[in-house]
Image (tube, rainbow, N blue to C red; front, side, top):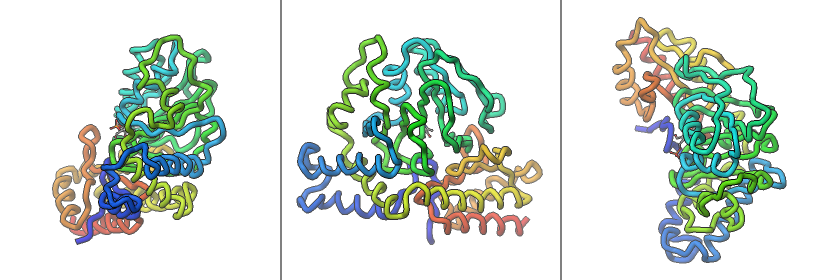
Length: 356
Ligand code: PLP
C-alpha cells in the first residue's frame, strides 16, 4: 500500500534528495568511497559545501551582506547562539509556542528579555497582532511557523529593530524578503535535509557588537570566516541539503512551492471546515499554517478519535497523530509532500464521515 508521509519532522524529503543521497552513501562523486568516509577538506566535499551555500543564496534571493552557514547542534543551539552574539542589554521575543518560549528562555541568560506578546492564553492557537517592540531592543525574535500548534506568520514583518526568525519548519515554503531580517535560522529536518544540520542566514554587519567574550564555536564570526568548515561539518546532511536545493530550483523555486503549498493547505482546511466530524484548532484563517495543519474531532464525535486514527493508518496515512499538547491530528504538508497525499487524506476523512 502507498504510504502518505505527514510526519512533522524529521519528515518527507524529495525523492530526488533520497535517491542521490543513497547513491552518494555508496559512491560519492565517482570517488568509489562513501560520502561518509571522505575528508571534508577534499575537493569533492568542498565543492558540495560551496554549491550548497551558493544555491541557498540564489533560491532565497539573499542580498549582498549576508552569509549562509551550515552548523551542527540543531535549531536549539541557535536559541543560545542568537543572544550570545546579538544581545547586549535587551531583547524582545514574540511568544507563539513551545519553541518560541524555549528560545526566549535561553535569552534570559544574557540580558533583559521583553515578551512583546503571547498567545499562551489560548494554547497558542493564534498569532498575536498589534504589539509594540521597545525601540532600544537589540532585536525581536519570532518563530515564523509554529510546528506544534499549526500557526504561521506568512508575511515578512516590518519592525523598528533587527528581526531574528526561527524558520525551522517553513524555510523555502515561500519567497522571503531576506533584507527585512538580521538573522534567519532553523533545523534542516523539515523542508531541507535529514536531521543533523542547522542553517543560519546572517547579516554580517550585525556581528561583533556585544561586549562579552564568545566561545569560538558559538561565535558566528568563526563560521563566517571559515565557510562553515571551522570544524567537521555534518557532511551527509549538507550533501542531502544540496540535493533538495537542486530539486527546489528544478521545480521552479520558492514561488512555485508557495503556490503548491497554498493549494495543498486549501484542500485540507476546506475539508476540515466542511466535514461534520472535524474542526481546525486554528480558527483565524490568516494565522493558519501552510505546513502543519492541526485538527481535532468536533465535540460530539470526540470518542471517535482513536477509531479515525486507526482507520486512516490502515489506509496508508502516516504521522497524523497530533502533538500531545494539542491532541487530535496534525498533517504536515511540507514542500516534498505531493498533493496526491492530501487528496488521499481528504478521501479518508470523507469515507469516515459517511460511516458515521
Ligand atoms: N524550532 C521549531 C519551529 C521547531 O519546529 C523545532 C523542532 O521541531 C525546533 C525549533 C528545534 O529544532 P532542533 O530539534 O533542530 O533543535
